[in-house]
Length: 219
Image 1 (cartoon, helix red, strand yellow):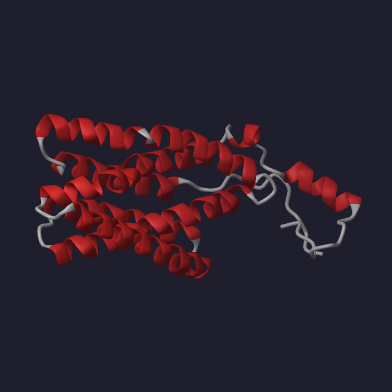
Image 2 (tube, one colour; image 1 turned 120 degrees about the vertical axis):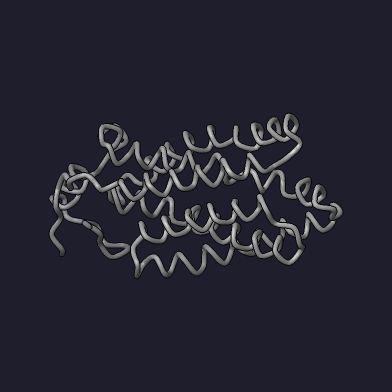
């Protein structure tokens, strides 16, 4: 990977090779994998912020007070912490792609459950499961970009992808509110969100890293 111990200066030849082999934003944008990843995280992003914004009013629709809704958001956050800690380490063994695809599948299942859940226990379990998947995806997003394009320019690539996916994802909660105001139900919203995550999982599965521009030799 062209990495050297902290504090050691790489030889000029190694530094030149690293610069030549780096996938800059301009180079990465010419690849199919880059846009598949961008589309995948836009799709899941459109869905992921809906419960964060609408879980409290959704719980009130089910007959629970705002305090219970806020408690459910806290449970969702706890699930997200668990997803980051557990799946971050596990993905080092299983690979980033299976971990992210599995998390997107879990998130799709959580949205289907949101569409039909009634009891408080089931609602709590669904919120935790959603949080776990959300935490996993957010933690591994930067990691899979680095896996596909290398670490040299990962910061600029992730920053651009976050800007694109995050900007478009902001429409998810807004559209969800409009659909609810029109239909009086979150059911269509949750089913759409589940479908968006299935699409995202397919796109991540199709994304394969482009050919390495320069192969580095270990020190």
